[in-house]
Image: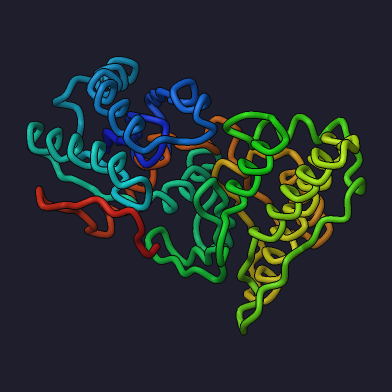
Length: 334
């Protein structure tokens, strides 16, 4: 089954063709980083306009790279939530038009489910059940993946996402946008105990919930204090200390959940899964406890349409299709 898939939830426009939920025939991505970096973050109106300008071209290119004609497409999938509402609407409306023109089923896909499904593309042997930590610029959640379309959120951030913590810390350190990669690269030059950063606790009865707002504020305050007093800020050390703090918060909760639920397989997904410290710490924790770790290659960690096509296949098998009244949502339960 060949699925033409679209992703437009934030600042990447993407179109892909995926066969049977596991094989990527093409995956075209247009990044908007150059459009937003001068503002230090994503400008929703600019993002939506850019999606409009390139999505048709990417669709044609995805078909061409896949070596398929329009008649070879069996269904159309798209991200319908969550994300920047104007951006998501572009992908949803284009996908609805494509499905109507082709006379094929329309499959709505939750963005986080797509990130989880990126692991199916990277690891053909991976099947539910397993535990997945989905970490990105806008979301941080620990998910019990009981089936391809049967998922339960065990815990999530109460405020900032892990990726947002990295982005805002990078901004105050003068590293630009997006901040994840430069923070990661800078951290390799510093000591991870250079600064004693907090690991914020979350009050309540859910031990798997997280909070990154206090950690972000601590980094911002250290940078501002150094600027105001004229003290030299060890940027590399601060970046390394930040990566360590975020990783320890994520790994500890994930491993505790895996132990409590009896999961022997752990997956990590989303843009923040590209962070080298997080990848190393998860590998060490899994080796120590005899668990198997699944982390997609870097090209599948960020937003892409291939992951939407992968999850779209399983949504289709479950009968989750939509009509021309499909709407987009800025927020939506998993």
